[in-house]
Image (cartoon, rainbow, N blue to C red; front, side, top):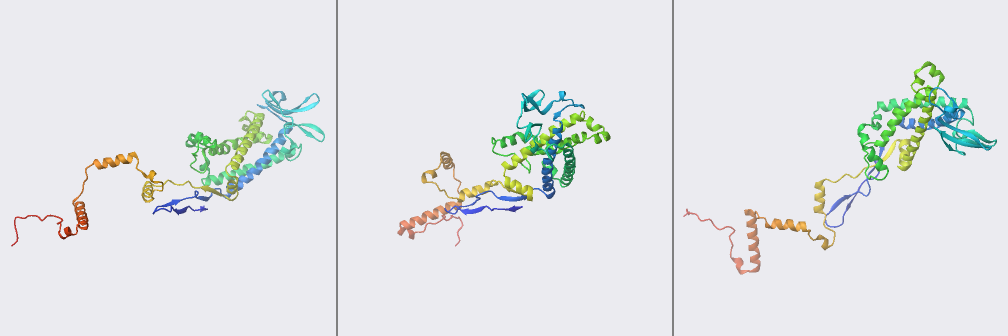
Length: 373
């Protein structure tokens, strides 16, 4: 942990008052992400892009989704396709009977040969314009990289205890509304107490413990070879077509999580966040700690008043307290009385030189019955 700037101590310039003033909160570089976390993060970023684009390539071969085990176009609950409207190809997106025109975005693509039906445009697919076999090879290859990379991340971070930092618990659930209000700029103080806030924990826990296992299992349930070896895979999703539909929906949940993740990186300090995920070092600010009551009292007594004379007049509360003290009986000990008598004598000597020749006894001599001869 390394400090970047130190607080500055300054004199007030009046009297003997001395106060420690920090022009800005102390900024520290904290080592947040280890090498395994950073490397697996960037591998996943590249792999997820290729998986989504190759998945779109596979979907273009049959742009319809179903529930169950059969695929009949009339029974599709979702379709991204094109229709002939008076000799013009029009793209559409249809879900549960609701149809929306998506010409120019989805369903149809204008090429050099003219408009062609195509669910997702070619700039969103790999490895080619229309290559189902190539898309499946790319998708399966990078899916295994995604699985092995995720397994390495899980094993390493479970071993060093990092996973516990972002797991969502019941205590975090209570802070979710306050964190949402903080992000909406309604609440000024953040309820975050650790490295991850409650919303981050909820998102990461959902992705790592729910979304990732489901998308991997649904992908394997679409494989004919795996279905032959493990009959329970398609059955757990209600059939191969249901597994395909769930896989497609989960893909867009991954895309949504990625967009939110990138948005938060951009809006919460892109340079600081990028340095954190590239080098591991993250700049954090320490909030100024409240001063102890004792130091505050000392500062109030040592620091003289700086305002005009009118502002130094006592308040009604102070006058009332002083009047109360005057009415209370004074308890003065013998030593204080002696000091008062001595001061009075000194003043009288200065005023009347002749009277100074006479001595004023501090205490009258005690009369004793027995005298010494």
